[in-house]
Image (cartoon, rainbow, N blue to C red; front, side, top):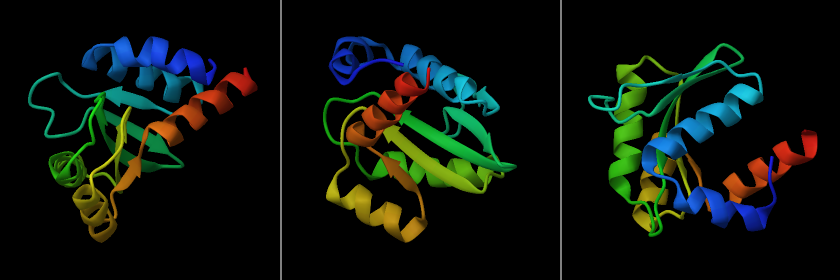
Length: 127
């Protein structure tokens, strides 16, 4: 899709809503059914993704500082609200030690900036 150096030139300057639409398009291009949740009252989930008939509740954080526990808690609660099988938090940043610990005990998958850049780089190579 694009190279690593373009990551900071594009994603870092997106609004939260633009980032949500961008990631939804990334998953759609990979062939996964994806649904954006309402902008308000989303119950801590920005996207609902279906992978091999598994529903995944995704919380997106376009942050510059580390993402804390609240995002993990929101994704975990949203997973139950939307009857999903998994919960993910995807960020343009990193995660606090507390968020990592909570994610480990709740099974929430954390995807930080490095992993996100790898995904986008892999997509670019596939195109």
